[in-house]
Length: 218
Image 1 (cartoon, one colour):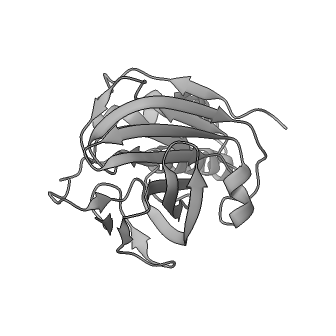
Image 2 (cartoon, rainbow, N blue to C red; image 1 turned 180 degrees about the vertical axis):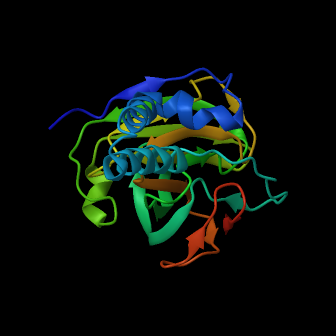
């Protein structure tokens, strides 16, 4: 299977309207060109134009008013699929909240708490469907943070379709709660690991939005 490529991107992000094209130009541009070249064949042209539009929609990055709270914010849009206690190399005994991102969700990940990125761990694995528990062993990047509430981690996990992880922060960078930290193309899974003392405010089956939904408290 092809590897899960990782793109290291600077924190000087493109304007919001341009991000679907800056992050997905390799797909959007050929599809848009194909749509233009097939104007004489409406069904084919419409299919290409629709595909280009869907890619741009999937990679959208809307501006958000970040929730002002002491709670832990959701790191991703999607549906909570699991909450459990785990052992983590960085956090220790941790509360883990797993979020599944569907193709239609916003694919941008945000910092759940303020802190400093201390390290990034690249873990090789498979490409199991992101909806299922075995996706936890897929190719992934684990972002280890240290903040006022202690250590916490955010894992960006590839899936059956999502094979590319874009990261907008580097070790040593400070982030504010709700700040953009990366993107997974196209839909996948994000896990948040918090100190054991954290109390979940969500349950499996609930929909959350990055930077807006409180998912845990201390």
